[in-house]
Length: 132
Image (cartoon, rainbow, N blue to C red):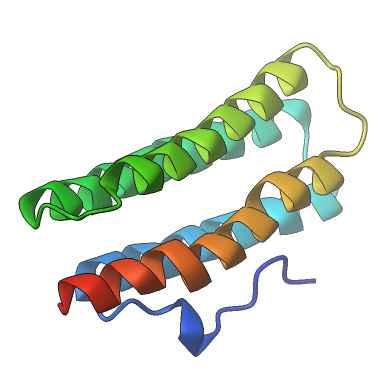
């Protein structure tokens, strides 16, 4: 089962950003599939690390674009990025400490809902405001 289904309204019109968004969605869906298939603790840790690293790199690209264009909601947008990264770090820490029993629920609430809302609101506004 797909955790995040790609939808046209997720597209910002910024080719590099849209490409990375699709790759991140694919990676998150692969992690979700691995969890459903009963991935080992080490496999889950590796996936979570990859998700965190790729999302961090993507946010750096978006933030560079926003700074370059002096985007008026840069601080708010960046804070939203930081919230997701904090949530993923919390999941990673809990996973290491064996504190979670259902990673699918934690992943879904921290990632799916965040991405869908962020794509449709913050990233859509960024594209419209910058006109790129």
